[in-house]
Image (cartoon, rainbow, N blue to C red; front, side, top):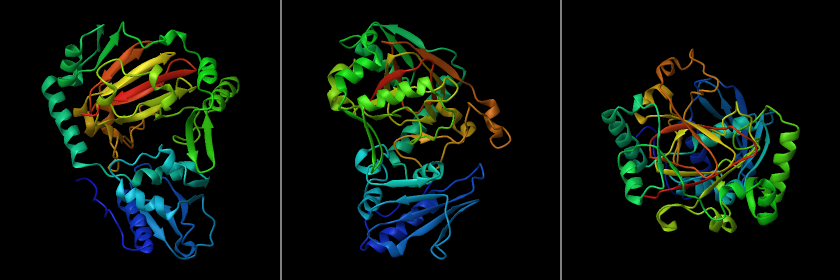
Length: 373
């Protein structure tokens, strides 16, 4: 186990708050030397605020709380308790979680601490180890292209999944086909559907979000904070109103966990999804525009500096779009497989492949389904 499993329950709220502070501290990493302060407040217990000071280690301070901090996070005790019950499956994009928390100040520091709360299950770590062994045996580090399968059978798809081999599927599309979708049509058809929740006070429906996309395209900005300031849904839950139009093209809906929406307008040099890997096989359907995925085999984990705290997916500290080889020297030896998807094309990406995603056109939309087995 790379980080200590936390307790699941606490007898008192006070113990839960102490446990939350310990969870942040034991999950903390800071290879890039970020410095900042975050005040954490629990509204039901105002006397138990603490300040998390980001440095070489995470220091938890409970005295001199009158000092100014860079960031303020207010989180209810029920959400703290839920974090401990669900640390292996916790998803900060869940409206029932992020929708209970408020943020002020430097959102990047809040995002940094949020990742410290997560812990992987034994099952997830076993999946990653299996993928690494298989990729080593198959020599996938040297793979230079992804095979394209035109209207394959389910048996062909299952074979690729068993061999942990990424493939691009062509010739299959939902109804209506992807070429018929535009952001204006999305706004007209699904205008009231909630597509993004960023805090207890910040929610957007499809109509509002499409307008934000248009505003960004007209007046783009460079500063983006993953999970907060980014004109992109970042894998938010696909509204159920949209399931019928963007359902899985293979197998049954019950074979997949609930689908995710990747919709937005992001500059081509900024990754829509930063480098990470998933423990489940992903089926990524490209709907609007083109996307490029840069894939790295699982046996290159030691070169990519994956974070020790994670659960549903494992992010990496190394950023290929802005490589710092002084901090991450082993990344010089990373090998990459690039795949470009157009509308109507589907990437089957087996569990364990590291990947980073770029939108080659704006606006851009994909829908992902993760195979639950």
